[in-house]
Image (cartoon, rainbow, N blue to C red; front, side, top):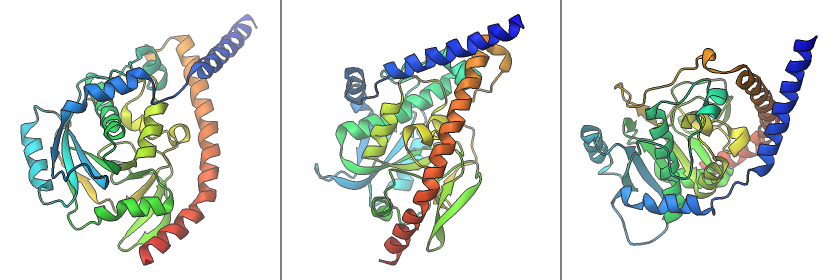
Length: 310
């Protein structure tokens, strides 16, 4: 009986601490550390095919380690004929200055600490979006990693008008897994789909200025790999729509990001209780957002069909 009372007290205390933490969180891309991080990383972009200072509909940014010369050369050759403005973005090897890493939260949210590669991957995508928002040179950005092949016959240049017509701020063009999906609308030989849950991977996606701002503002500390954080659509507002079959493919090559694998033994009893509470809250919120997305699907489908037939 005593153990039950102690456990109940721990759960209540953890819940109250979480609520206090949530009340103190104020997400804003106007905070000084965020903008400073953007400016510090402005020199890491190698631009190509620029045409003055005009606002573009879509631009491509390739996240790549400066030391990965062979991969970078392949991406340069692949994109040299692209009609879109593109650039190589030097990948980070650690977290972005505006997003400190919390190992204790990682044990709760990810079941184990993140690896150096995962921290660098998170920092790279965060920095790429921050640079996109800071420079504001395009309405949408296609962010790809340097082990991706883009279908040269696909209509990438039309994606901004599709996303605008459907009200989408985030669109996946690849994933390593394909969970349960809902077909929204046919688009020629492809379909617009909505993924039932996050499929993991950050190899290729298009994001709008509003979508990038929403994601950046939702991240206060790093406690998950970046693909898992992007997949939390019920939290960051980036609904999981995608084009399928995917117009991007990942090369069969050795990944440069060593993955972390959860080890339940690394968590203390208190952390395991908090992990249970966090997952319970996230499940409830995800189910609420899923119901809202189901109601929205008809509108998105109608808009997509009209767009394709126009």
